[in-house]
Amino acid sequence: MPDLLVTNLRLEEYNGLHLVLLATSEGVTRSLVHTDRPDPYLVREAQAIGAFFERTERLLHAVVAYLHFDLPQRDRRNSDRYDRRTAFRGGRRAADIALPA
Image (cartoon, rainbow, N blue to C red; front, top):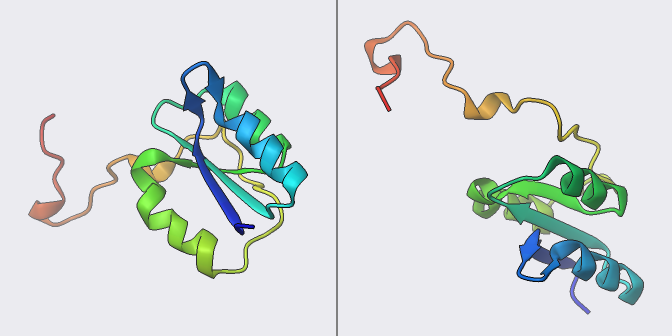
């Protein structure tokens, strides 16, 4: 039995929440749901049933923490809140100037 289920939130006619529910009933201790197009309702639903949520672009870096570190039982992060890590914050050096998109 695996210790971690990693699934995409959107899976054609189903979604990853179906897999999370099945895994929970089979005794998988942790589930990680990811997507590149987050739906706030589905993200909150995933957290409510005990899954952690990550955006797909951060998945490769985050999965290491889910495998090797002791994390809380539930994802307590607020999915509705703006993620500061995605915004350019700049600095005083010329290399910190934002490039035009």
